[in-house]
Each structure stands twice: as C-alpha cells, then as structure tokens.
Image 1 (cartoon, one colour):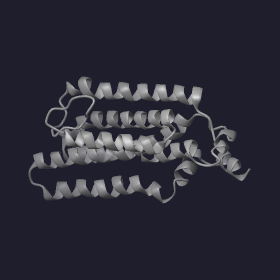
Image 2 (image 1 turned 180 degrees about the horizontal axis):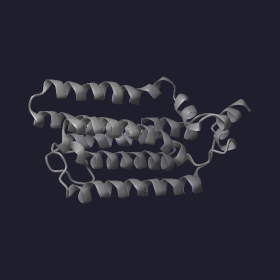
Image 3 (image 1 turned 90 degrees about the vertical axis):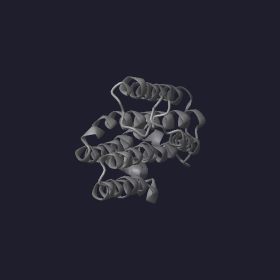
Length: 220
C-alpha cells in the first residue's frame, strides 16, 4: 500500500501535519504572525513597562496554550475519526499519544522562542515560562484524555476552548489552580501552588489517556 510505504520512509510527524490540510497553518499564523506582531507593536508603541507587561500576559495566556495543541487535535482526529484509520495501525503507529505529542513539542518550541522575545524586552517576564509551559502540558493532557475517553476531537477542542474562556472571564490579580490566568506576573510561590499542580494534572491525564488508549481503543 502506497500510504503505508510513504509513512515508513518519510517523517511520520511531517506526514500527519501535512495531512491536516490548510488548517495546519493556523497556529503558525497565530503564533508567528499575529502574536509576534502584537508583541513587537506593544514594545514599540508603549512607553510604560507595566502596560507592555500586561500586553505580554494577555498574549501569552490567551494565545499560546490554546494553539500549542492545535496540531495535536487534528492528528488525533486522524486516528480517531478518519475513515480508514486502520492504515495507521497496519503501518505500526499504535502509540497515538506519541504521534500527537511530537507536533505538540514542535509548537511548544515555537512558543519558547516567542517567550524568549518577551523576556528580552521585559526580564521580569522570565518566570512566565513556568506558567505557560505547565499550562500547555495541561492543555495537551486534557485534549488527549478527552479524545481517548470520548473518541471525539470536537469535544476535546471544545473542552480547552471552554476552559480558556473560563480562565479569561475569571482572570484577576490573584491566580488560583485550576485556573491559570492572572493580570500580574507570577510570584515565586505560584510555582508550587499553580505550575506544579498544572503539570501533575496534565501528566496524570496523559497517563490515564494512554491507559484508555491501550485497553479500550479500537480502529474503525
């Protein structure tokens, strides 16, 4: 079979991302065009560092975690909902979490570059690496877990969108887990009260999701 041969000889991750179609460009546009432009515009037009910092907080919290899992959602859809997804099984791609994790890590690296740009402009923003990375891990764990349990990436995407909206609506100066957004840069004690719980829950969701995948998942 041509598809199976292709997947054995070419990069599986590149193939899966390419197979998303035109929607694969959405996170690139949002991160490397929209978000980066907003970062540069804020730094160039604002004179008050507090205002710049607030802009960076909004950009990183509203955009980065949500679009970090964009490719993963559509990769998961290929395994869960696409017709003929038994081809992936025949090609030996039985670890669905690993296949979804690779594109997630690519976008996470992209986000790390943007966070570095923010930190160069505002050194106090460095601690926000911990918040955004732990939030991204949580988002991935939630998407993967929901996808495995409900066999629906639409529900998974809806769940992270609702979570993002909830965090944005209740965004205040004080941040409390399980919500992760705030109007202020993190304090050092938030590393234990917010970032660590986000990481633990995100990893736990991945572990449970992997258990569901191995025990109960079947191809069409």
